[in-house]
Length: 439
Image (spheres, one colour):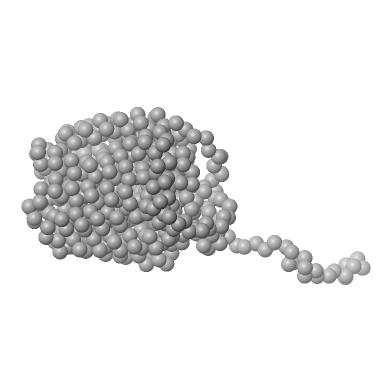
C-alpha cells in the first residue's frame, strides 16, 4: 500500500505492451553474403585453369592455341549467356537449389575432362558443363543476393562479392600452377572439381532465398513478404531483354562491359601466362603475377563499391576504362624473362582496376531498370562474356598467325578508350532517395 492506494497488476496491460525481440549481433544478410562469397570462390576456381593449361594441352594433344582458345571462348560465352536465365531461375526455384546444381555441373565438367582425348570433349566439358555451371554463379547471382538481402551498403556488398572471383584466383592460381608444373594438368582439374563440391554443404545449410524466410527485414530496410515464385522464368528473361534493348543505356552498358570482358577474362586471364612464357618467363612465375592481380583486385573492387555509393557511376567507369587502356598499351614493352619492377607496377595498377567496373555498372542497371535490374545485369554480363570469348579465341588465332600477342594488347587498349567514352554518354535517370546507411 502506498498513500492509501493498493497497487494492482493489470495483466492485460502487460499483454498489450510491445515485446522487444533481441536483435542479433550480426544481421543474417551478412551470413548469406559470406556464403555467397565462398560459393563464388569455389565456382571461380575453374576460371584459374585455362591460362595455365593452354601449353600443357598443346603439348599433350598437339591442339593449336586457336583450337584450345575456342573451347575457352565457349565456356566464357555460356558463362555470360546463362547468367540472365539463372537470375530468373533463382526467382522461380530459389537461390539455394540453382547454386547447388551449378556447383555439381562445374565439378562434373572438371572431373570428366581428366579422361578426354579429343578436342570436342574439351568443348563439351570445359565449354558446355563448366560454362553453364559457372554462369549460374556469376555476377547475376551476386546481384540477386544483394537486391534481396541489402538496402543499405549495396555498393559495398557488390564490391565484396565481385572480389570473390579475384579471391578464388588468388587461392587457386598459384596452387594449380604448382600442381601443373609438378604433377601435370589432370590433378589440377581434380583439385578444381573438389573445390566446387566442398562448397555444396555450406550453400545447402546456410543459404536462404529471402529475408522473410527467417522473419527478417533486408539489411537497412523494412520487412517485406517473400514474393510468390515467379513462373515462366525463360519467358520473363527474354521479355526483360527486349524491353531493355529498346533503351539507349542498355546498349551503352552492354557495349562497354563487352570491352571490359575482352580486356580482362578474354585477354589477361587467358593469354597473359602463355604470352609471358613466350618471353622466357616460367609458367609458375607468370601465374603468381596473375595471383597478385587477384590481391589488388579485391582491394580495388571493394574500394570501387565504396566509391559507387558516393559518386557518379558513369564518371567512375570512364576513369576505370581509360586507365586500363593506357596500361595495356604499355604491357608489350614490359614483358621479359624475369619479373622486373615495371611489371610489378603494371600488375598492381591493373589489379586495382580489374573488376572495379562491376559495382558502378550494376548501380547503373539498378538505377535504370529497377526490379528487373538483376536480369538486365545478367544480359549485360552476357555481353561481357561474349567480348571475353571473342578475344580468348581471336587472341589464340593472332598468336598462331603472328607468333606474338603484341597486336592483341594494342587493340585492347584502343577498345578501352572507346568504353570510357560510352560510359560518359549514359543518361542519368531520376531515382527515389536511398535510405541512409545502417551504422
